[in-house]
Length: 131
Length: 81
Figure 1 (cartoon, helix red, strand yellow):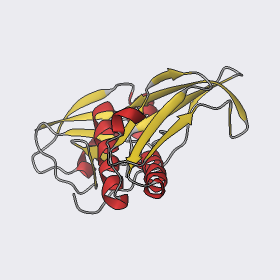
Figure 2 (cartoon, each protein chain N blue to C red):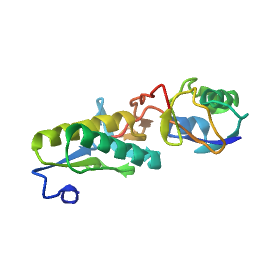
Figure 3 (cartoon, chains in turn brown, orange):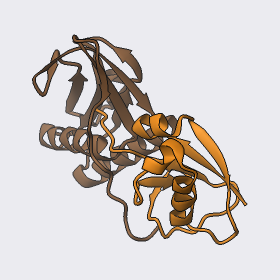
Figure 4 (cartoon, rainbow over the protein chains, first blue to last red):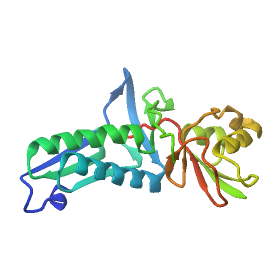
């Protein structure tokens, strides 16, 4: 994924993984299941990557979010940023993950060790006044 | 006109379906669709009166006017990452 983003103009390549962890809000998680509004999620991730490139002047940014059942320790999201310099790469990577969490239509259902499963509360995306 | 309503996550659980075709008078807005769905009763009565929606994959305010064939997705709080 990183190699695919790099060009000869880049001096930095940064890979971020979001990973399923064993606890959330103090409850023991046994597994997670992600679902998405797939076509819109892809569009929104492309938009966010475009915004980050324009804002921070990086090279290519690739974003992948998995759906379906994931186990502890597996990556749910990966963000690869290529950039001429490292500073912009770190900023762009941070921007992408924060925006993704607020806007991309993905949901997660956590299964707990006690057998219960719940949709994880998330962020209500901001809707601009004019379409 | 007919619009396609899509439901995800908690809203899907409320609706009991992934999607529903809804007939609306021409000129109807997103808010009218929300009202019509809530009035059906059952689980949909628990849909918030100002939910976040996307019309044809763009987040859109409740005042957005709908057109025949539009796809209106009801988006509960998102939790990716």
